[in-house]
Image (cartoon, rainbow, N blue to C red; front, side, top):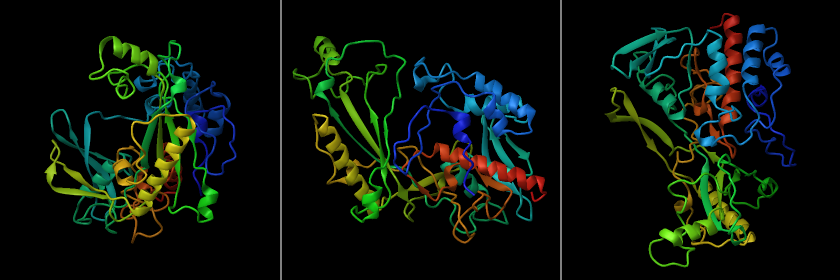
Length: 423
């Protein structure tokens, strides 16, 4: 069954409207109105008064967004979602969560039958080794680190690493296929100055709009991509003036009065567009343990391999063409042409978009995957994956909400199986 649609209700609620495009739901990002702290807890945690109370208390602590602070520096009113605000606070209040700081997980330990029975870790302060035991081990260390833990979890039962009986641990890593193009919009020059310090991280989202053309065979690549935009006059930083030099009337290094003059004229007139697209897994994108290099705690690190297929490069060429076309329709000026003829130059390296998933992919058979459809590792079903490592590919959407929904679904299944005595 698909993940239950509960994550959006708990984390964020946005007053949006349906846009009539079949591939995207109403976008959810930050709170634009106070959450329903009466109805939602009862819906999410029926017959659990304690959970309802803790969730309601946490929801009442989160205000609707009023542009209070720079989003990148943390939301002072709790409108923006982050795990510290939304998940950890109520979880700690249950009394059922212990957090071990400065603990560097080393490997998952297993008993002679191959069943996981704990995790060994290194104290990052004094370098001492410790072990915690448990009936279940849930890995949510992020794509790379989850794969690294599995590969480092070697034993007589699993000499090539836990979850690697298929040889697929660390394989099929993907990321959003991303490129960027920008221009300067003369119509946005010399905007009146006003206080926009609290406005940052703004985003206009354009979902993939050429599904029909793709189905009709008019495009030469599978999957789609989205557009995100960056502009405005958010809080200045050290590189705010970067790019003014090609617009300025002055020659040489831009500084002093001319820099101030150009900053007033051009600041906020730059419009950037970023494209992020789908990627299918391939055999050339994977990670493995480095045979020599170890981290400061003596744990082998990962070595990554990456190569885009022709499908991704064709997609990037199309991204560049579409971004240039859109910016041109806005009257933009450019300091360079789009890289539609050289997509390998335009595309971001794997991992740069920070949407990497895979490395412990789910599947229907232990012969060609690491975990099953419930994210249980085939080698040891009491080890579960609760991050993006289980994804067999990348969509043209950000993966975070899907990761959380899938983790929620996995947790529900784990609870159900434990109640039945199957774990």
